[in-house]
Image (cartoon, rainbow, N blue to C red; front, side):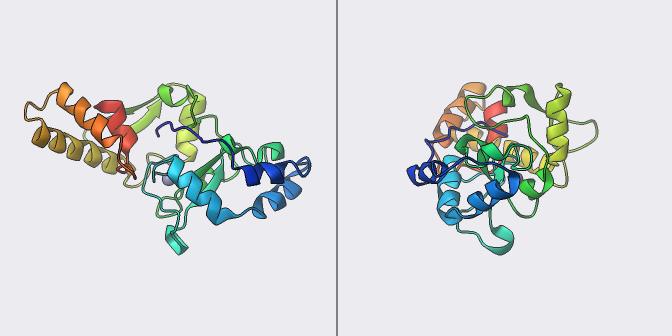
Amino acid sequence: MRTFAKQPRPAWMTAVAAEGPLTGKEQARAVFDSLDKPKLRLIAVAEQRGLCAFCMGRIRADGDGASAIRLAHRVPISTDPTLALTWTNLVASCSSPHSCDERQGSHCLTVDPVLPATTVDQLRYERRAGKEGLWLVSDDPVLANDLEKLGLNDGDLPRLREEAWKAFQVRARARHPKGNAEGRKKLLAAETKDMPLRPYFGVLQAKA
Ligand SMILES: [Zn+2]
């Protein structure tokens, strides 16, 4: 997971929010579902530079079927309907193959990738004896539970993070032959400007 900044809420969404209070989960869901979702996806994917808010896998606003992205509420509508149209509560999530949004389900997340945030600072990547991969962990039990719910150490994710980190080191050595921390920082600064960002970019930010 990596932090990112949200732009101001789109004015047309604010106009919808001004039409009346969100009074219950069914009404809030109906209002949310009435929004122009393709437009919201475009904005959210751009804010997140093409990465799922949770697993940092590649997402594309124009994906369809299995590759369609989801708009996820960090605090679900079922938990707090008044946050259904709150822009900082809304992030773009992958739908396949991992599907962070489906895994989140109705779980209310404490971990928050949106800046300003302090929760992502309490996550770290670690290796496990005899295994290939980088596991995302936290000493805070509430945050660790969020990672568990989102399945962020399931399937190929630890291995994919390790591969992203190794590939970054290869690129850093090719560009800055000393292969030292300074070279990695320079490459990281250059790649931070990429649009979209490379998948699992938060791993590189945490380790470079
Ligand atoms: Zn994801």
